[in-house]
Image (cartoon, rainbow, N blue to C red; front, side, top):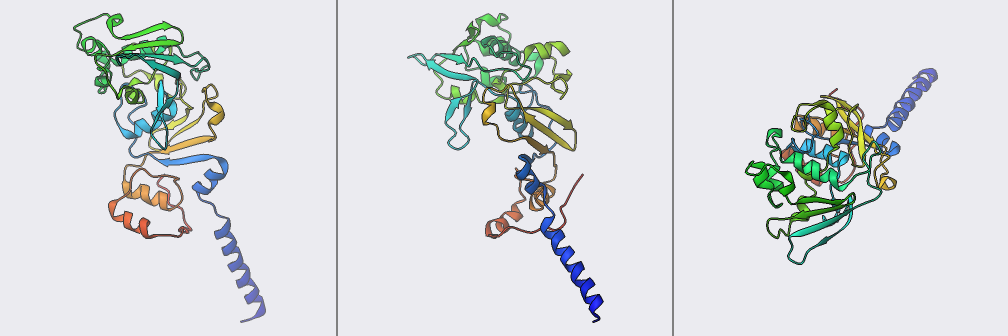
Length: 299
């Protein structure tokens, strides 16, 4: 081989190796930029916590809303959230929640006890079609109100004592009541925003669109492009904003488990929520990371 051709070949090989080393996946770039890329199954039907039932919707709601309490991500122990503390009566029937002074909606409005009263009233409106309304039936007279045997919501065991104090009276002692409060059906919603776009029990209004949305979770909507991406960025008014280290989360709707697995394998997703069963043994046996030269894209 002539020297000139040898040099050219070496240059081509070097450039090829350099390209392989320098090309970064979405996961690598996301880790550097603090952007989390997640597979989220099917296209979400919506984000209203009082009208949706699926896991893709729930994943989004956990970023956008927060209840009185939350669950520790590792132990699942109940921890304070919007409520900084609470007391339970000796008979187990009355819970008194003290809402944080620093708890705010993403538009800067203070979160009050009345927000929970009005939100749970909405969640129990039959016309709304809340399939998880039964989650609230442990509360005194909640089922009666939902079944319309009583029409006055003040008879339901939810009372705002003052702006930051909420009393909840149960039908019977319910040891798992605090766990229920972390379910999206009991999350608060911003009533003035919903009313701005229509009736409280109308589940078709555009209050959940990115440009209209007001929530109280650690993130707010940045972009919602159907069949492409749902992305969220930190909510500056979140009471624990200092603990939010991610700059963005991007949820990708992927209907097919095999496609999502390929995206995960190619380094396009930090995490996948689904995996074809026939692929699981290979991931269990594989010790070393896989180098994929050509990232797979479905968009």
